[in-house]
Image (cartoon, helix red, strand yellow):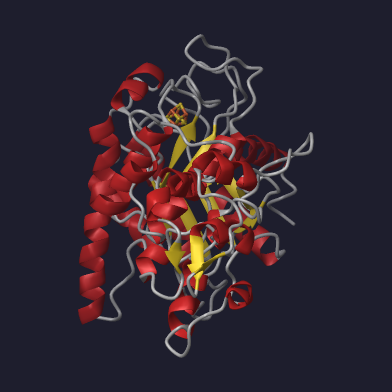
Length: 425
Ligand code: SF4
């Protein structure tokens, strides 16, 4: 194996894969491409990621192009002032490494991020050279998710978008004040400029492809971003409001939240001994799910008087406890939008309820069979006029019934936890 036997390249890989592990925005989805006689297929379901036990998405080949950086963001392991080994791939090294890994079935795609070596244009040109080799010389049709660097010339962003499936620009911090504090070389307008460009070019590309099906796809899996959680005093309300704005104004596919892992000793940052706020990250993902699929708005879940999510109960239950005056809802009459507000009823089960009650009124026993999580929903519904909660509908009493049992000592919250997951509600 010519490429992987190079000790120099192995060392680079070690450095640059290690430096990429704090980037969580790496789920692959939403694009389909068939390999036209070349290597690989991109599929609509995830192909270049796996899920770690703590719910993080881990790409099988997830690397930085370089960890040499001209910026000095306080929270970052790659910052200019950090005493860390540095490395950079050449375009050909990265392309061949990806193909060698693909041929050995180690990976099905590439997640490529980068620090900023020399300047954004220089780094982006190197990345484009690597992706061009992959797509054109190696005929690699697998999934590629690449980071775009704010400040890059728009023509380079356009070229990048024609090579990658997904592009993300990590905003990292949700407010101009936090950026000024921890990442003084970054300004919000400059960070948002490529986000806007990708949004506008994607819309134009979709229109063009409706007229000419053979037109090349521009960022077919859309764009995403990442926020660091817990490095600054920014509240969950600030993070969710920023996410909501990004979904609405720029049609982002995903906003990822990354619990801050203390790496640097700096008075502006949480202490090195601080634990990453994984439970907070988990609640933010649940709230994000409510924004995207349940018709909630950030301002309904949080406000200035309560700017942070409850860590004990999921955000949908908390919303319901604050709005008990609208409950219990009669399951046979509630609108689809109302059903989605009931803890324990998810998108799929709401759809099934609406479909089945067209034929006959549902019984309480039917609900479990169609996917309703009865242990949560029972306090918020009536069925054929009967209330099955068995307790007075008072916030403190319902809350005490819904609190999860004490977690074991090494409990690690996961996106796939049955209890409290927004996905199955
Ligand atoms: S620009 Fe990116 S890689 Fe460079 S120090 Fe800031 S966060 Fe780290």
